[in-house]
Image 1 (spheres, rainbow, N blue to C red):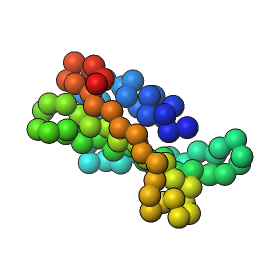
Image 2 (image 1 turned 90 degrees about the vertical axis):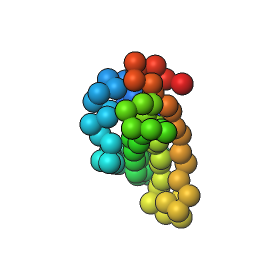
Image 3 (image 1 turned 120 degrees about the horizontal axis):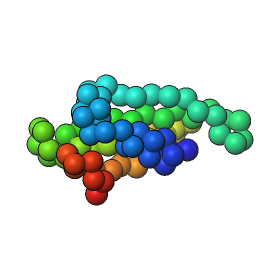
Image 4 (image 1 turned 60 degrees about the vertical axis):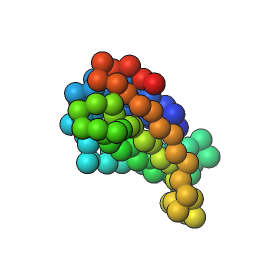
Length: 83
């Protein structure tokens, strides 16, 4: 679920992702088991303003996992290339 949500998010153009900096994208999804999960996506400057973006996704079930969510991250260059 997290990988799918993250890949959909990073399919957006670089400029659109820049506009989401400092605005956490949060959604609730239901897993195959019927359990609800919260997914959060954050976009930050990776090292310096105007350069690469660090895109971090996390998922938790609202229980103890909320204290240590599963995370994945990607880096996007200004030309839209993922590294």
